[in-house]
Length: 416
Image 1 (cartoon, helix red, strand yellow):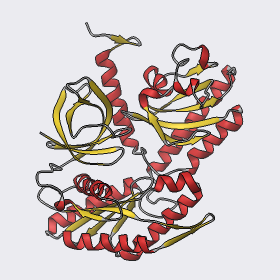
Image 2 (spheres, one colour):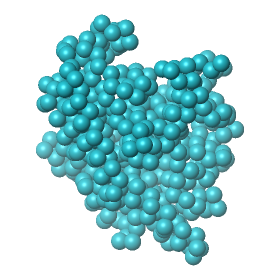
Image 3 (cartoon, one colour):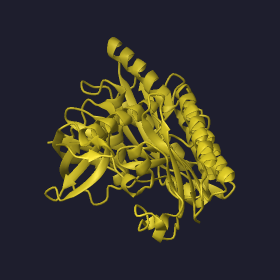
Image 4 (cartoon, helix red, strand yellow):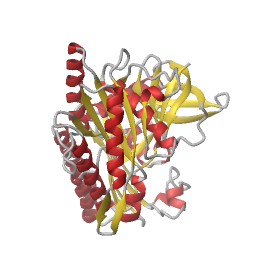
């Protein structure tokens, strides 16, 4: 008989998790740019409940990602290390008035260490279809009570968060950089690719990521980071044509689609943007900052005939650029032969990376998947060997993998 978790069989739990991740994928808000609407709600949590920490978050297969977090450092945390995983598992609010007296949390590093968490109130964020995709939380460093009225107010704020998430689905441009949003970029790119295939003309894709951007935010603050992002967007528009697509895929990651441009031409455009960025100085209230970026280039081919595949190939090239020292461009074709980054579809699935004869396992999120390859996200890729077994939980999928390219939190793998 299957084991049971919170009254559900393990099979039911796995199916619920798969459905939850599909709902989360539909929203397409993971790793999205900072949003003032979510940060306003985090501030309201602090002010209404007089707590140290206000948090709005989403939970994927391996981590809790912060839409907005005030009072705690960082942008995410491994799922297994969070209080919120209990909210996700139970799909109901959890109130911990004194974490030192709760067996689930009394020995947790956030309780025993410098973070000194004592109080936690977490409420699930649910879609209209009832899928729990994340949490909002009031957290404090001293024990306290939380009344039924307090809980009702926190639950009302979940409605405001979900309203904001739905509103963001209709946004076509990023308010800070005026680049296309990730969703709008993908939609327009698919149209460009369809036209290129129909009329048999070239098309190239560039993905680039600002080097050491997290250090800018951590050292100089988000205001300085915003100035860097705006300067990068202006520089990119200086180089590309009016008819090219320019989108912001994530916090510091951008992409360009170049119709009627072959692989060599795409690489030349990427190099022009790279040189312009490296030559600029960005004025901020903390002084002048120098900025560089790492670029990956892919082009339409027999295999790469959709935006997800082109982005996966450009990502793999970009990770190589980072590993080679950053501030450089790498074309996908310059990677080792047999890299295995073939046709992909975008997914969001919970996975597990197993190695050391299966004695070691690391949770991951499968972000894109093809017949011969996948794109994975992890909390930290350090220590993951070059070959391992990938398992997709609940689907009976298991295969040997070889790492093609990686950065600190992403892996491109080929199936063996």
